[in-house]
Image 1 (cartoon, rainbow, N blue to C red):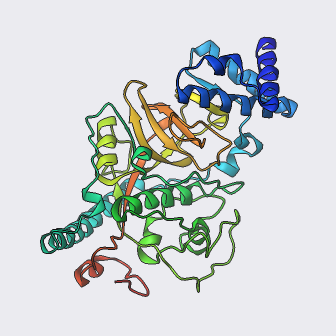
Image 2 (image 1 turned 45 degrees about the vertical axis):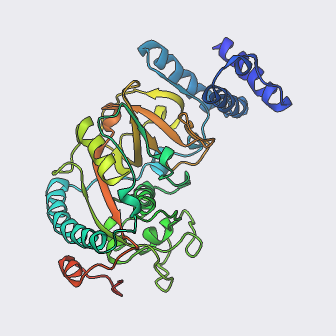
Length: 376
């Protein structure tokens, strides 16, 4: 432990002075250099950490070493909040029956939407739909939706247990990119305030039905406040979903192959996971805690790496948590081992409305609640 604290001091002081460390100088890849800089960021934070945080990190590191685990921990911003503030995913008690009912409806909606899309392609052969131009092979040993530009920026839910809303809208934003070739910044606050299911900062579940029936505003029009407020119903809705469903028919945990197939077919997925203090403190490596217990947090599944035996996820705890995971400069991502901490439970996909064609009336007649006002 003393040796680690010495390294923390050296790394932080070098970063402060603008002098690259000897470790950083000898790395021969950009990803390696970036990882060292990030660890120095966490090291500098840890030097100023409260005693209870230092003690907890010491205990976590001792456990990681004892169990030969493959990830590192540090003083992330998530440690400044409680798990109750961060982990607000609450699975419904009748998930299996709900999932079966939802997937039966999704099959009908997908059929109507796919028939409309195929007819548009037939009548407009020169128009290239963005979703048909993307290649994803579920048999590949590595895939990362970020490298296709189909993942929006890392968000921060702050001290509100609205991970359910952030995972919902993160999946939607990726689908919108895939289907329309345009980026979006949707409003989690709209979903938080205006849902009629009782979801709040105290917890909730996937809110895709909200985006189908009501639509969602832009972040600029309805900014995030990290607290549930009265619904601002007069703000215009800009973004709409057309269908959603569970990867596993009963809403359970799909196999590795089933998740890969769904990632390629639909894009990034909203998935549940069991988060713990070790998860809160994650800074790099492959997270392989394999903690038991109920799922309590929603994240976005965006890729995989078979050489690591791990999924790539995007979290909603801001850029002072996690790692870049080998791409870009923003932290907020994690490699998590296949089957660790119930990752992938209740995996759900969503389809954003396609801006290239108008859905027929028969599609809207399939919806239990027709959008008000109905959008073309």
